[in-house]
Image 1 (cartoon, rainbow, N blue to C red):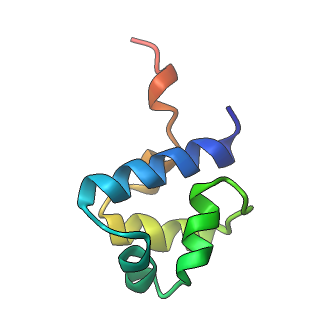
Image 2 (image 1 turned 120 degrees about the horizontal axis):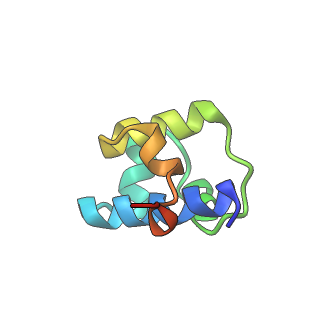
Length: 74
């Protein structure tokens, strides 16, 4: 899976875990809701600065958003 799709999957998972709507997350990051939506669908080549904004809003380390949790080796 590409880094973009891993980020998208993790972003959605952390957002829903926090109970945030896409609109609420976008508001916290000063981004547009449709931008957050397209990032979650893996349609955007997101800038590192925006990755950082999203990580801060979700209170997670940016590496957690890029980590392929499904394919970690024990």
